[in-house]
Length: 408
Image 1 (tube, rainbow, N blue to C red):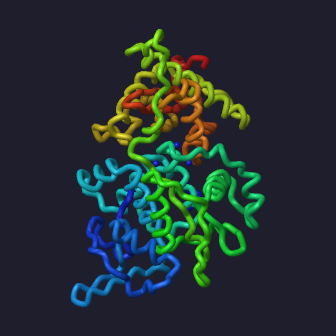
Image 2 (image 1 turned 90 degrees about the vertical axis):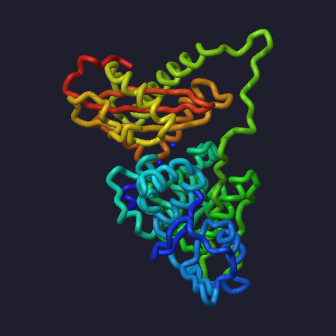
Image 3 (image 1 turned 135 degrees about the vertical axis):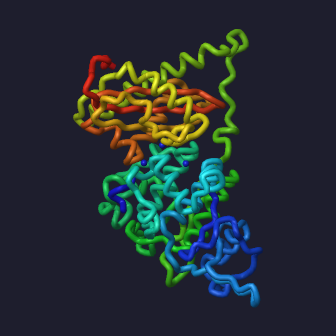
C-alpha cells in the first residue's frame, strides 16, 4: 500500500468495518467493552460524545453499547476523521451533492489532494492503516492548513534517538521525524516507532482529542505515554488542529502611513512574481537530484491560469465542469502531470510564498515525484490570490511540438 503513497489538509464519524452510516450517532453513554480505568476511557467517551467516533454495536432495547477499542482502523476511517476537520466543504460536496459513500469520499479526497496516487483504489483504502501513513496524513493535513512547519525538525537527529529510526523508509523520514519530534506520535515502551504496526480505534480516539485541542487553539504538550500494560503506548498521537481560518490571529504587516497599500496592481504583480519563483525553485530542486531543467511551455500559461482560478472555488483535480484537469492541456502530449496547492499569504513575501508552496510539494511523495520526473520536459505555473490565500498550479508536460518551449 505504501508504494502507492504520495506528501502540501474532517472530523467524521469513525465507523466500524460493518460501516454504520456516517452522521448517525448515538446520544452518549458508556461502552460495555471499555471498562472504568481503561487507558483511553476519557478520550473514547469524549470522542463519542462529540460525535466523531461511533460505536460498533448498540442495542436499543438494553442500551448496551460496544466500542471495540482494540480493533484496527483502515485508511478510509482514519482519513475521514482528518478530512472532516480540515476540508468540511469538500466532504459535504462529495457526500451530499455527489452522493458518494463515506469511504468513497475519503479515497476521492486523498486523490484530489494528492496524498495518494491517482491509481489508489477503494479496496486499498479498506486496508488497515500503519503508523507510517498515519504520520504522513497527520503532518500533511496540518501543513496544508498552515499549522505545521516540517523544516523545524532535524530528521537525522530525531531518528537517531529512535531505536528503529534507521529502519524508517526514505519517503517517510521527514514525516515520521516531524510527527515524532513534535509529539504528534510517541514511541512504544522501548522507544521504537514500529511504523508497520496498525492503529486501533482506542488510539484513534486519543488522536482525535489531541487534534481537537489544537483545532480549537489549545496548546498540546508533548504527549505522555498512558500507563497501560497491554496496549502499546502508541496512542499518544496528537493531531494538531486545523483552524478554519489559518493565521487569523496574524494581521498582515501594516504599511507605513506615507505608503498606503496598493489596490489591484500588487495582486497581479505578486502572482507573476510567485510564478517565476516557483519555476526557479522547481528547477533548483531538479538540479539537486541531477535532473535536467524544465523549459517553460508558453502555450500552457493560459491553461495554468484557468486551473489556478478554478481551484479557488473547487480545490480538486476534477474541474468545476466535471472534466479531468488535463482537458485544458495541448493534445499532442506524451505525458502530463498537475500539482495543486493552497497556502495562506499573510505577511509572507513573494519569495516566502513560493518557498512555502515548494516546501509542501517537496515533502509530499506524489508531488515530489511530479517535480522530479524524468519524463517531463516543460512546466507552466499559474497562481491566483483570493481571500488571503495563494492557489498554485504546476502543469508538467512532455509533448511532440516543442516550438512553444522557452528558457526559464
